[in-house]
Length: 470
Image 1 (cartoon, helix red, strand yellow):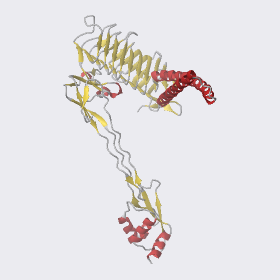
Image 2 (cartoon, rainbow, N blue to C red):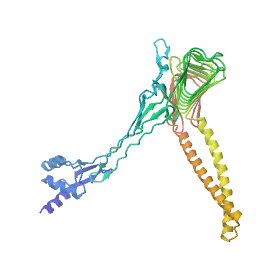
Image 3 (cartoon, one colour):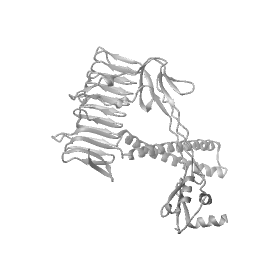
Image 4 (cartoon, rainbow, N blue to C red):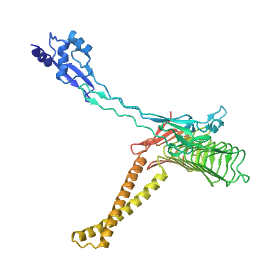
């Protein structure tokens, strides 16, 4: 009798499952005048359809008590559990080592307060610098049909160990090995550098500086002098046609008067109130609140020029991701080039790698031809001892060439992928861009023929598109 009742319910009711098997629905396919069933019958129907997990027994009871209320619609009767993926581990720094990205405080009169950006992260020997936060395990889910949905566990973080820091035996905490200043350099390495301070100008009384730490100049850097630091360089005054190179960031309070000579190069960020006829290169950002005039600027990520004046005019500005300025060019149509989404060093490396690949491939072809002849002699039993030795050497040479080709091809693919990722590349003009300016995004170029106000340049449908800045 029970079997007949089940058949009867199956005749009126259909059960469907979502594609991801996380939801099961009940739907009346035939609407009878006086249909009745029990919750147990509906449960048995679900089991017959292999629905065994996450069943809403309360909903089955509601349907059994008043079936007509559920006619002409799908009713959710079982819900599975989505997998909960674990969170990646991360390195938690005790100090805010990324505050290089903070904007200097802009006062009401348009001036910029640089006091905050000269704050140093001083530590004592043995002081905690950073801790490792472990990844979390994932929690598996389950479908309404009882199948397990595996979850991914988070990836563990690893310390990027720089200079003058030590880890505990569990690799969970990083400590300062000396008294000094905590600084991040390239590849997110955490270091503690001692600080070299000059209470005045860098001139003939001081001479050039080459220091394995951070340098603070409480004055100016005069024409022709050089400062090289493994950490940061912080200058309260300005620089003339000097040469500055830092593994970390460079901060210049009063600006750069480059005269087309010297250069400023930082592994991370360069901040300066203005740049005039300067050559500046930063691994990450170049941040200038006032003006960039007739200069050559290269930034691995962004060039931000949007303070009280925010002017870029003349020269060439290159950024891996974004350029933001209030004004680009001037009413005299001074040639001004803005390039984004392009990393010149990557393009140069790609050309070099392709040349190496061709040379290695040609070398491999010649080696294989020579081996083929020796293999034929070996098959005929005519391989002399000296040729046998040559055969061994050529096999080793072949393996080396194949390994080298594999490494080169992997790097070529990696660079090509990076060069194609130009979706985020953009140029934002908060006020005006004048004729005579040129915008380059990836492989595409746009010449500005007419003055345009408040515009955003980006790639769309294989060309440079313009949209309004809100």
